[in-house]
Length: 233
Image (tube, rainbow, N blue to C red; front, side, top):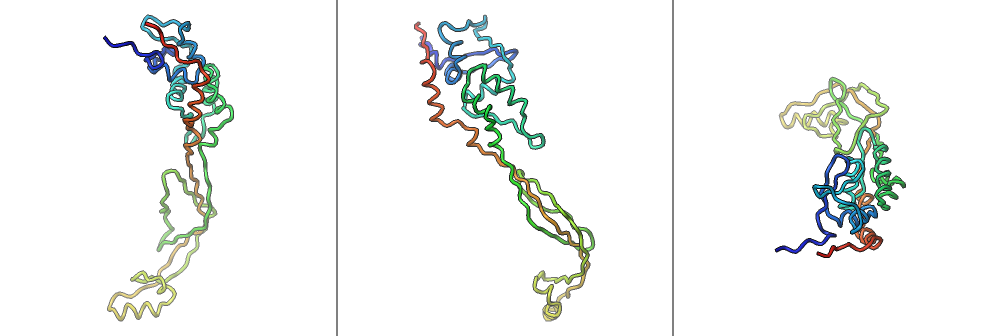
């Protein structure tokens, strides 16, 4: 017959509001005095199905449990809407209720603002196309938005070298002789439209170190709580 599993590693089922969660006692009591008391010998009573009822918002508790399991602080950020401050505030109240001091301090200090960084850069740019307006063809990483600023267009006439030798644009005679000696088609003049202005690049980066609880700090939280209770069988 298998020996009973120690209580501190045993599976625990929680009924939080209308939702049910499965985890271990160790995850719950490591940082939360609320759960250390609930799961102690003289703590709360289980329901008929063996679960513990917690009167809280199940959707918010999903984020609480994710933090308790891995020690990763939550980020609620959308590229278009920015941070979800209402959700941060609601989660802060839950952190206070469950006595999770590190998470509470992190949310109160708004450290999530340091996790997402937006960098703006500006650089002069121009492009040109023959017989028509320039077409934007800029390539950027997925986390970077590119925008043209202070755009103006200028019409001009220029020499086109069939061999795409840049120096020939300024020395038409040299280009003609080069093509003639090779028996190839000579260059020609063409009308261009040049677009000039500034390119604004907006790059969004995520600093994972701001959201990750260091192992040393996580270990220190264990010493602040009562030792795991192991029931005598």
